[in-house]
Image (tube, rainbow, N blue to C red; front, side, top):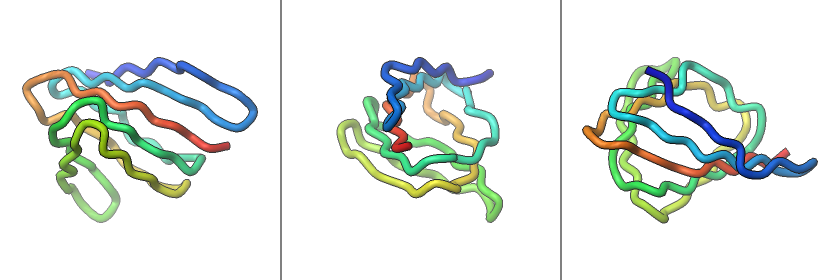
Length: 91
């Protein structure tokens, strides 16, 4: 099952997307083309499947983090409830 994404804002400088993950949903493997900030709307754990292995990421609602372009992974909701975050990509 795939996570769903809804682009809320797109300009020449930024893309703001809301991501919703049903239990067990994933993004599919992808590479980030832009620097980005994630703002979790839900607290919980996501599984990150990366070239170097698999790891768990604990996120807390309202506690943002930033990453540089080039991150490659698949993100999976391992919670038994819907997980949501907003991703802000900087063009």
